[in-house]
Length: 135
Image 1 (cartoon, rainbow, N blue to C red):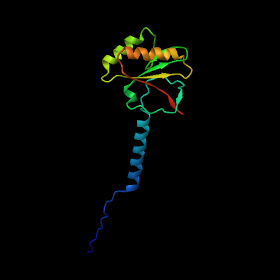
Image 2 (image 1 turned 45 degrees about the horizontal axis):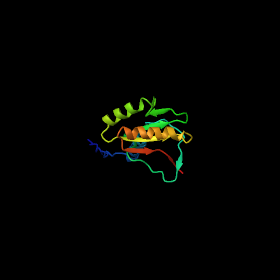
Image 3 (image 1 turned 45 degrees about the vertical axis):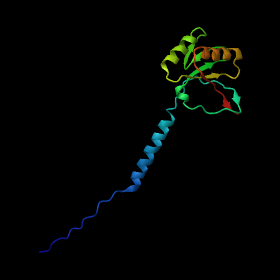
Image 4 (image 1 turned 30 degrees about the vertical axis):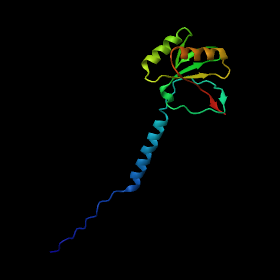
């Protein structure tokens, strides 16, 4: 009688498909995280400046957009000049460190921009910036 000798193959993990899955997951997370950037304001044609810098914590700042026709947009809500002080006071009360970024169109009337800046200062918000594009 003959006894069969069984040879067992050692199990091994194929690394190439594992690397493919890891790279797919990495690419997916990168694409999702890039699409999660928070833009609170309304896109407008900004003036350009040679000394423009990126603002840290832009997502924590309120955005005041001044359009060329004098309309004021607080984050993405259209407000009147009369409503602006109340909105700014409410924002200041709710924010730990209130910051305001004024995004004015390049062809906006300067007196409207100054009015918005003045209202922000009257509300007691000391950190006020103006949004520009880098030349």
